Amino acid sequence: MHRVCFLARSMAAFTLALCLSARANEVTVQNDTLSGGGTGTIQAGFAENESAAAWLTSPCNGNIVAVQVLWRSANGNTGQSIEDSITIYNAGTFPTPGAQRAFLQGPVMNDGFLNEFRYLDENQTIPLSVPVTANQVFIVSFRFLSNPDPNNGPSVVTDTGCQNGKNAIDALGFGWVNSCLLGVSGDFVIRAVIDCAESQGACCLPNGTCEIKTQTQCGSLGGSYRGNNTTCNAGTCNGACCMNDGTCNSTNAGACQAASGFFKGVATVCTVDLCKGACCLPDGTCANLQSRNDCSAAGGTYKGDGTTCGTVSCTGACCYANGTCQQQTKSACEGAGGLWNGPSTSCGTFTCPVRGACCLPDGSCLNNKLQTECTALGGFYKGDNTNCAANPCTGGCCFAGSTCLNLTKTDCNQIGGSVWQGPFFQCNGATCPTGACCMPLGNCFEATTPAGCATQGGVYHNAMTCAQANCPIPIGACCFNNGASCINNLQPGQCALIGGSVWKGPNSVCAVSCCPPPMGDMNADTIFNALDIQQFCSAMLGTPTSLEICKGDFDASGTLGIGDVSGMVNALLTAP
Image (cartoon, rainbow, N blue to C red):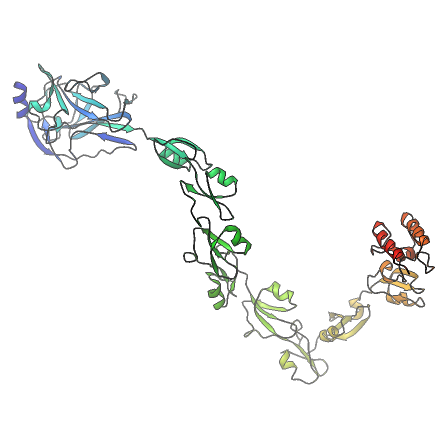
């Protein structure tokens, strides 16, 4: 009875500030409801070697890694004290603890703090680690080394409202007793911290295989976690696999990738049109319900499975004459004077070339042309970011002898006897450009204008004399004796020195240029028979003469060979 009266006298109220926080996967287990700003009671009626204990329940499989005891005096400034011990027990039979699980001797207590202990030794080298299972009841007991001051403390603290079967006191002369029966009005603020082992389950990895992992491990591997306590079975990691032709089958990610398919995710289901989507076509329009293959065959850009034309935008890189780029639809681009580059292009990766005005040889002008495009048209590029309106196509206009003005073709034609030289030729001062004109046969005309040379089919050499131009003289086959004779690599003038000759043109060769008909008459007796075959075979196997090559080279290869046999046989069979 002395114990009951003594505890009742020692109760004092105060406001508490708590500031501890749990680490990852750690759960604080407690009976008390005390929190920051809460009101607790100092239980200062204990005697030395008496103990206060809390019966706690683990919420998970894990390990007890810390215990916490709230220690408080009335004024909160008594400094540190060393108490007897903290012990963790198995549940036993309330109010008597079971077997001892861990023992911490001589805990140093700080007044006004929720003291936490994570090590069993003073040097903090042996961590506290007591295995527990989900719903297991265990006990944390705090043992006093000396009597707390009955008026001031410090001592352990309780909240308001004592729960039966949750708290006990090892009282001198009584043993273990339910604390509620001894007049304690609340639950002891004695707690445990449990590191809950993370649950495991089936993890579907990116390659389609299944392994048992924690959710954290699965996430770090880029896998799909199927839930706690799930198992790996056939089909666990299956999902919809979309093929390029729009078909769908159920398989895992690895098998889908090996089949060149597109995996839609674990547990996804093949549905109608799952593997089809919107296709942006080259003309800027959009088609629904297209497979990848259908879209590719149409030259389009596939926007993804399950997309529709109502949810996508068929934009592409739109290039403007100044080289700027905007992501626009075809109609918007062309409406603003841009050049659309197709739905598969993006301004982020596409470099828009700079364009300008292009003057054509006939005096007309084209806007928005690349320099390479202008050159291919035989035109004169006016420069980047130019336009026809501000950059008219002028050229040398020659009239009245050598007078020259840079004019447009239209303006030049108003002057009688004028010749417009084209956009490439500009007047040098007041003199029309003149030069040598090399003709196809190597002859040359002096002091011609560019336009005059062009009308004769020649090659103009500005400001040159014929001697300076050194016009090349072509060579070719020279046929004579009615085609029975031929000499290669002669210039036209050289061939003309041979009576009855005919020069066959630049780069011509005897074998294909001057053979007298009919081909196949190898002995030139105008009769096609076995004698011609015999001479053909002898010539083919030996060293044929120019005339023999001329008569038997049916495939125009310049010599006699297997390729001429069929032609020879055909000539013999069709001979009159």
